[in-house]
Image 1: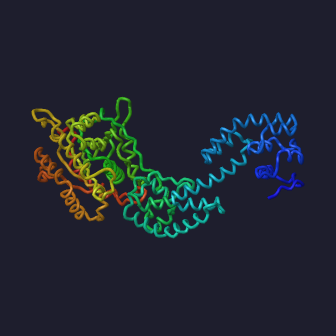
Image 2: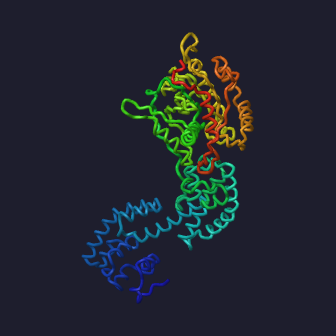
Image 3: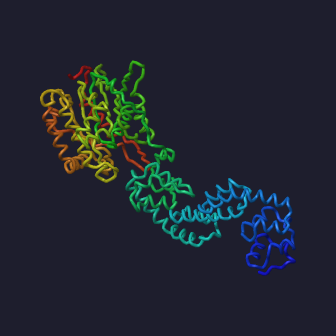
Length: 542
């Protein structure tokens, strides 16, 4: 392009600068054709910033003194502004350019900053979409930049992912049927409601294995409607969307062993973390409160407070909410007093203490009997066990573990924890060998409860018993032998040949979202077993 003097008024400052850089024009020529004083202070600064002239050059061209003063002030301001601008250029990001614009909303480089910030925003959005490889993010990019630099790449990859969508939806629906426990509320929320289009929420996906269908589904920005889950019978008619998305049921818990009641029968539920102790109690109390004749017995302290009532009510409500209770809090012992009136209207009652000890405490026993025993004592478990109440022990084993569905808990963890606990129960007394007055010397009955028996895929009681005995023989033979020896040594379960009772337990069928349709059958059976084992007397056994 050749400079035409007659069109001087039509050229922009940027065009005039280009002519000067090409050697077609000098500052003096511009001044002769159009007095420099007619240019704004900002336009004059553009000449200086482009290095086509200096302030002294403008002085030599006779720039008006008032304009010179204005220009001096702008140059002084630029000395400060320049540091911010250079920092923004080095960052070359939306954040950097935004910082410059906020500091200098009328600065020399405002237009350039806005231009570069727009380019940076597009680049960042594209890089995020490419990195996440996400349908939602590709759509978001194309919506914001229909004529963008990467529109063809985005449209091509989007088409590929949309072809894969139908296949993935079929896979994830099948996975939900086979492994509903994997789809907790957090993951289900991402699948139903999706993530933010700018930054898809990936928290909670790290625990899923590489290539897992759920992780791929969320990463691609796909969603599944509640209606689809209902139509595909992933969620039954008895569970609403609100119930499905309700958080897991939190329980108020308190470590209140100092007020532990005496002259009752203690029913202990013992197992590692997430073995199902709270779920067993929840099903048991819900069933017997609504269908049986069990009665909560207050245990009010000197302050007029009952530390167990809120915990008991929470266990009962959990099944009404169709959500199993969350595991017992670490370093917690919970107990609940229940009175069971004798059938036939007699005045005799079985007075029971239901005791749940934190599963994490059992995990410490699996690590080291020495250190674990100290943790056991620090928690207060020894104090609770040392009373002279008659005791019934139920050891809980999680059938879910053998299916590989219990993160962080293994068959070995369960066996070692319970074996070490049984060792403590055998030698926590007095005398030469510490067996006099030990916990097992006060135990009248011992049982093993295999929890999450719904995963056995049969409701037949005899079939479940056969599966349970095979499971225990194949995976817990050492513990079961030790338990049988303890029964024989301390005359426990004498009427049954010194063999521990074996029961299976399920709350009912579980669905995605950690939601359950409560079936009280196993809870009622367990209640009947407890009533049979517990003495109907108000007098201490010892």
